[in-house]
Image (cartoon, rainbow, N blue to C red; front, top):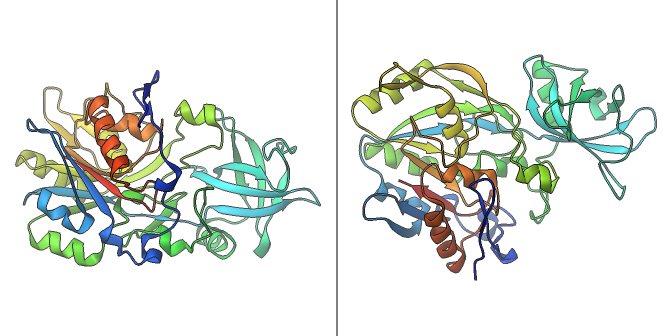
Length: 362
């Protein structure tokens, strides 16, 4: 039986059976990317919940709809090195690339009982393979669990080092260290995400072309995702978010604004897209809302009280209990309807997390 409790946020708790956690890519189980399950929540007057496979998503879309994809590519954001000269082994989990070319990162000592109490301090240097060195600057002002670090390389040379020595960030529910390619969407082009923008993972090129042939329009932005967990239950439940960098081209902004003018729907592929577009929304001072193109950073929190200005629908994954993404869903649906849908998903044994099943809200 699902149990719920509304917190001070609009998010809620529920019991997620451990067997409903996707431990690896569906392809490794003989299931095609686009054959994962899809739960569709119709929030119109005749509210309903429908169940299908992801490749059937076109049945719920209308010619003229504009789907917005996040093209950010997942980087191998977990790096392991030694504190110089002979200190402990440390995992550096990259969280955010800052405008001054430094990074925010979660530093976790290896082979100790408490990985966050092993003497990391300002000024320390961490040495990795390939001659890469990171200097620890200071704690982040907002999120004390994160440190600001600078690397001895920059630009393309730094990213090449990440790809040679890093691994994808992996949480304890993932059964084994899967290759980085499994953590990419097929359309990802712009490296920068610490974790996969996973809502679009089930898309295949075949399905994308099929949707285009049926009149579904598509546009692209980039938002580089940060960490989904700071490995601290209290901090995670307070939903403190680091700033995330996004890019919206003039072409995409024009497509969105034109679709709005023509009465079409904007469907975000992922909560990352919702946050970027709602951040970039501008009004003419009366009623008309447009999306402004450009490069920016967002720390926008979206919950029940957020009036969606740009986005009409959302394709997303299934989110774990008390996750901030559940708060975002309440901008689309009342919490009790999300409860109902999630209870149905659990009863039907949908799978959760980045390699799991999906949810379309229209």
